[in-house]
Image: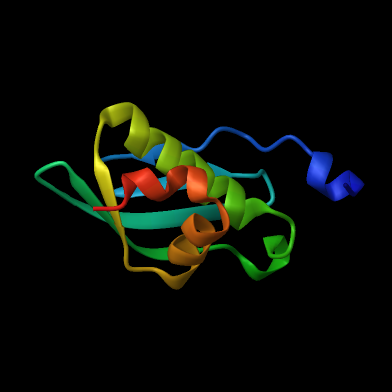
Length: 98
């Protein structure tokens, strides 16, 4: 595990007013946009600023979003390729799939 992998990420926040999850690293804001309907959260877009890519920020964002989905008892529909790949690579979240 590299030093980069050991860095502590800030908490992922659910900005319900803007319907997105946010991870503010202090160097930039990564977001995951969603729609919510009848207990199903569709995550349709993620964005990590270019300067933050390849540093685990996107994975931390999606992990935090999916943990929030689980806490709320929702299911998820991954319409964003990154979220879909994350769930494939982390099967402990596959039970959340709608």
